[in-house]
Image (tube, rainbow, N blue to C red; front, top):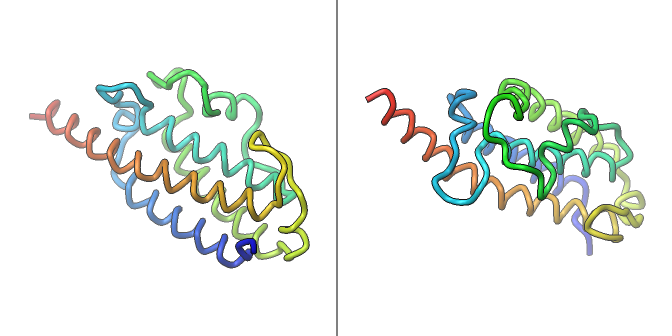
Length: 163
């Protein structure tokens, strides 16, 4: 049994809401704060979530909002984002989050059970579109947990810098 389109739409909406809460009030400098352990900054993690939303849109037969240059920055295994030169602007990532949500909601509202049952191909293999989407939603929740830790770290650093 695959998740229906309305469940997927609710899951994406909930994730978008939570991401919005976690990034609220953060600055571009906050988003680039590097963790003191091996890992990526908030900018990379949010960009990575958005890159996987591109995959979801492609599975649903929709055009995405990024080109190859943007995707390359945030793919699994890409170089860490360590400065504003390598990063997409924070304000753009926030706008792209809102755009990705609108596009996903529109695509899922139009998705039929037959379309969700069709086999889709991604870097994660061949399986029904709904199964891919279910995995992508789970993937987002994993990275949302990272956003919470990175937010706390960025706010702690900001307080340290500002005294």
